[in-house]
Length: 87
Image (cartoon, rainbow, N blue to C red):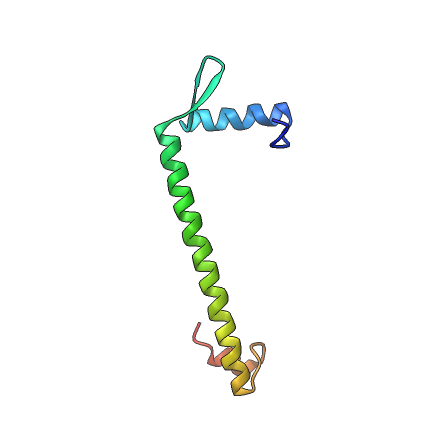
């Protein structure tokens, strides 16, 4: 609770949400990650990796477009370059 910088009230709220979603079950005084919770985390991690990769690719493409733009002597904000942009 303290390591996550959560108040007890917020902790109770979030634990209720993950239990209701079936990600965690309660056994006595322990919270156990369910198979559904494990699958969610696996898919979330995969999605995050794809997202980060896509962001890096977009940054690379943006840099390449800026280089091409500078070679043409135009600006990305100029009306001419905006009308010529494909994407």
